[in-house]
Length: 207
Image 1 (cartoon, helix red, strand yellow):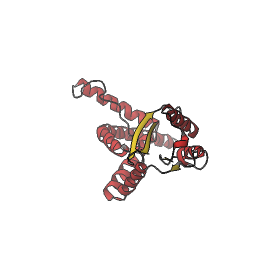
Image 2 (cartoon, rainbow, N blue to C red):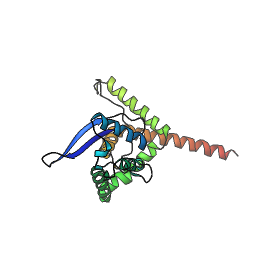
Image 3 (cartoon, rainbow, N blue to C red):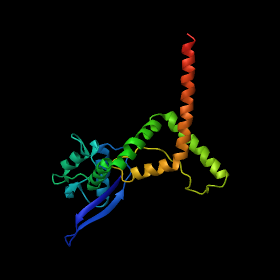
């Protein structure tokens, strides 16, 4: 978990500073509160000095009962909550983009069904992964790809998150990079389904 501080300096200027990153075993509100308090204490700060707090809209962060917002406010009545402006901006951009005909067609009509179909089955995910591994191995053998550390990392077709900054762009890049593999995988899956349907039909006709 990363923690930033925003404060007013001696010249009356709004200043923002990165305080640090701390490991959390889970995302429960009590765990996050303890982690934040620990990081504050390391820097000789306490919750009593907090005058505001802001993060995303997840239930563990700003739910109704025992959320992080409420737990911190119980330590400091002045720690007023403000929904993260960056998350608000991202949600606004996603909503506006979906109203655009071209963007809506791409994300709603094309990418969403593809990601739901591939990601809806562990077998299909594994099928795509194996196909991509075969493509990479073949390209390396032919010298079409370089084999250095950090190159040729495994890619996946994960769904974009509305509050994750670059997830939509990353999804498009992954689809473009995996496009030949996706087409081949879908063709193979279609062929397998046709064979299975044929077997079932022939089995029914024998009765």
